[in-house]
Image (tube, rainbow, N blue to C red; front, side, top):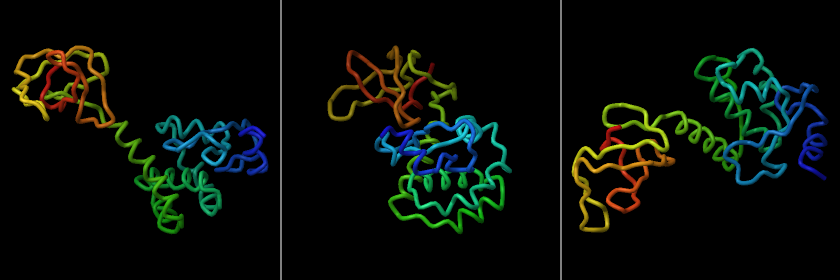
Length: 190
């Protein structure tokens, strides 16, 4: 049985968030350990579109979560929890639903992990002047930096070309003086 077939059976061929029966597709829950049916949900175009493009969110569409929040499926609980947390900054009803919702500790941890990853992804990496850094940029070191674990010091003015971004928006990765290292982005300028 494919993932899509398993999800259609589980959801009775309805969107697992709003119960729509139109244009259903598999959606892998972000920050999941795998891409099995247990880590996916079946969503309609409307739900999927609003999750992928949060600026198009129609708050009234998500009132359906009042019923969906009682699902026994962990992947659905995670999606409901995350969406209610996002909406709770804008609407009182979503905040009330978050307070009423019960999820097991491991499911809540999974849901929170995805929210943290989204938050970190939305924070840009900036240099000392506040310029946004992107992968492939070249930067210059603005102060002498000792390299942890060695007696080496990277001198001010050292160029670092073709940087890479890390999971932490405060750090970049690059090669300085022939050595690959993680550098605090606040000590660089574009």
